[in-house]
Image (cartoon, rainbow, N blue to C red):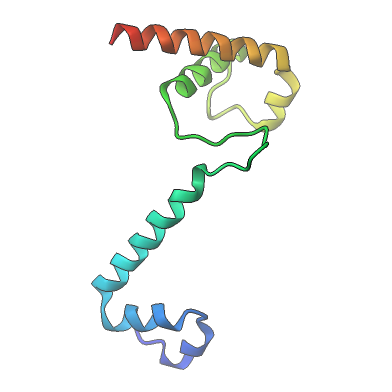
Length: 109
């Protein structure tokens, strides 16, 4: 496609030039940028109460336990529903159960 009339609208002129002259190089550079960006996904601030981590088996187990307890599936459950029915104590109990189940499954493997 030719966008010469609109080229000045694009803030990243270097990317535009690479896209037009070396499509494979452009794709490689995009993949590099994505990889670099993904490195920061799990960086956490010191002292933060929320910690972001890669998905682990225990997370899947916890999700399944919550679905069983509250009788919902991905299609029906939304944030408002969760906020109305889930207490902190119930969540902590489910986390303990998920950890125990995860440890049991890991020892079986």
